[in-house]
Image 1 (cartoon, rainbow, N blue to C red):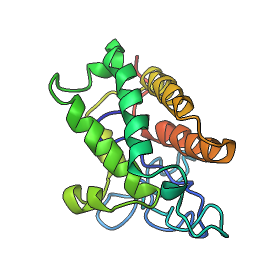
Image 2: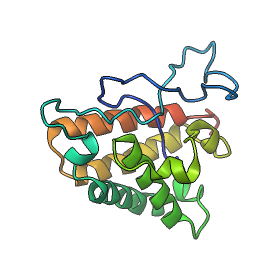
Image 3: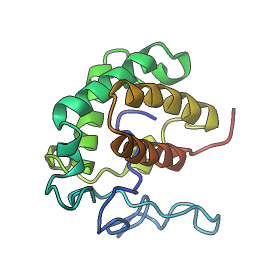
Image 4: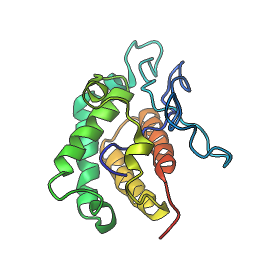
Length: 180
């Protein structure tokens, strides 16, 4: 994955599944994998409903807000920086920009500030990843670094599983080639 990390759906929400799907929506040229059996995956932030309906908190608030997502993303990019396959997808001086973009995207997706869309518009994640060779090897490397980063947060089991489920499905949705 690259600058704008994956935006697949699956957020715990009464509205999960609502919104446009990756590659869907007006002017997007149709759904990804049309005729291939690939699922449509929502990328509009849907996690504004509480994970714990009684708490009134969003998932974003439950896991600690911006500080948690910054820790996640910085731990993830520490792994990316040492991975020759993934780091080659970034301009040498742009890891900090990528860190800020992914942090903003994840914050917004999970019910935090909407700064990402205000600054960058609709995520259009499959389109943004199209210039890069995201094959199963790159996906698996991305998942390995992200999994380590998620584990480093030491979240409660439900929040950890919810976050990981989303990230794993998002990574699979970004694969755009099977070429080595």
